[in-house]
Image: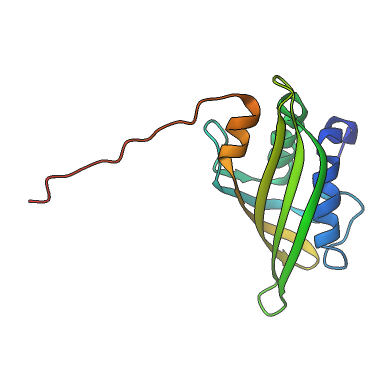
Length: 152
């Protein structure tokens, strides 16, 4: 991966993921832990953020701009659940930081469901707290109206 300096805003995130996957993946840096064709899904996310990213290069490009919006300062609360039969690891953790534009604190809880094959991540499914993002960046929470039917 070129220009790892582009990702310094994510170092606490990279570090806690490395702790959770210690001994399970090969590589020295976050982006070395993935297959080139990894699929990353963001199940609970925020508007204008992709629901699915295919490929390591696309994932790196998505994360490259993170420091323009947020800066991670620390991460903690790690819980690791590893199912050796399915090669699935579930990581629970919290990332703390600040929104660049507002300076407001950012404390987001994550659950990441990670599939590992041959010591590389092949699939990553992420769940996060979108309200933490809205609060940090000072955005209004989008309201989606439920569709109602007549039930006839």
